[in-house]
Image 1: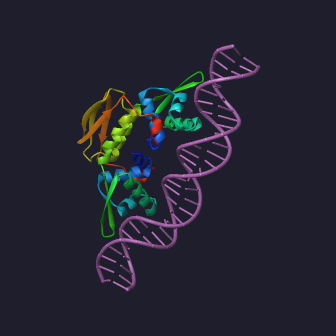
Image 2: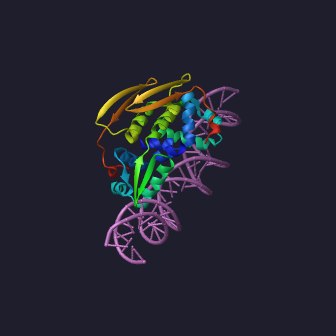
Image 3: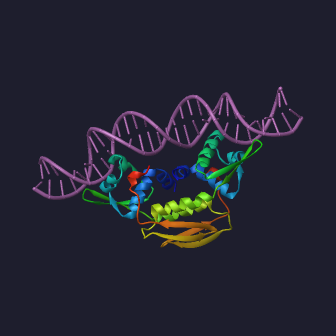
Length: 116
Length: 116
DNA sequence: TTGGTATTTCGCTAATAACCAAAATACTAG
DNA sequence: CTAGTATTTTGGTTATTAGCGAAATACCAA
């Protein structure tokens, strides 16, 4: 999850995700949407791939990238972990725009020193 | 919103938020939960404050920090922007664990070149 | 005013990250 | 096989950032 938040910290990478949300793009198509170099973009793709936010398909020399929406639920759940109201342990399933989010809140947390 | 994602990119800062979710803490109390120096922690507080993720109250020489849950909705909304299913413009209000989220999805997006 | 406590600021270091141009790799049509 | 295209990797630069110790600031009891 640290990789995900790290990947989301960069505005260019968020724009890449926003573009892929519309539809899959080849590396070249994405390159046309941005003013930065292709080599830099390639580096961004690697970060997003490492965070499992995107996936790639190769066909000949063409690489197509697509959004991996599956991580979305995890991110939201993690945000609940950071911001959610303290409450007794409870599980609530919520459907939002055809996406199902499993929300888990807990009143007990590990000591922060144990992480990072 | 860029400040928010940048603030969330660091694991120590996420732990700070997680601690503040339990209850407000003074700077000293937070310092006891982490192994890093107080000066570094102070720097982290500044990042979180700049992102509006936390607020502070002074009483004498003691500073108390508390979580600003108001930003949560914005972050989730922004995540929908990045990951939400493409759909016609629609507004849907969803209540999740006493938190109301206004979800806005749009089928038209600005060209990424215009941002960052 | 002094001394003590709580906290932040400052100046520095080392690591990381975004950016670039050039080189390399991968693929394919002719 | 060669030439061209699509994309990534490499090596370098510059800026940013997390961490530290020391100094400074803010506050208050004695």
